[in-house]
Image 1 (cartoon, rainbow, N blue to C red):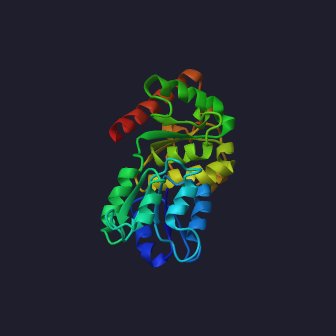
Image 2 (image 1 turned 30 degrees about the horizontal axis):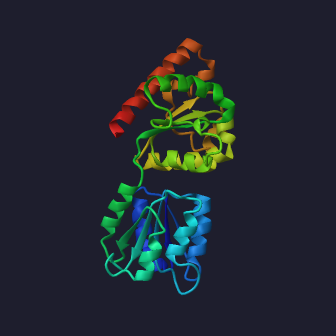
Image 3 (image 1 turned 180 degrees about the vertical axis):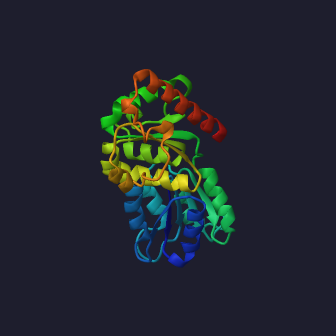
Length: 278
């Protein structure tokens, strides 16, 4: 997800539409009076992977540089693109000296081609080359089985993401956001608790499904436990094809040797997809 910060909606509404057409998630803080303050609050909530912001954000409130400095306190590495009418050579000295305090930033012209901005954003955003495993904690035994096969060929965190790999004390929400943004494959371990998890059905699953609909990601849904049709429907999983005939025969009913064979077949498909993405 990227964040746009402006004081004039007319300046960015076409840009928002274009990014969304390109499959790039966008949140925005647009306010004539206090866009900077809104941006800080929104950045804390959404934890964007990139920020596009005007240097001048209106006559009142924080300007773009002050806003970026505040955001840097809790998002120290996020790239920031400052949209401005100034070039590097015409930038006022006061702005230039303050920008030295903002690492990992870039000036981009407001009157430049929109396509060029989209290209810059794509270069700055991480590529989709990883696997994201979406599951309920109650199904951790299935995750353990899957991970045994993943470890044989893939590197944890580098090639695949499972939330149990997040280190203690880390920003778990940002780790999940980053993993979702860099996933080209998603394994869904579907069960009643998967379908009833608000975090899965409101946060992770919609983003995976949206990316799959735009063909940025391929989903591998596995029905690991018997699940009511109504629960699947509420999670928008009632009309998809489950892996390995698991809809007719959830994997909990398979013998362990048969389930191991199914995991091998699934992991082979995932690995082929990841290799094509790199």
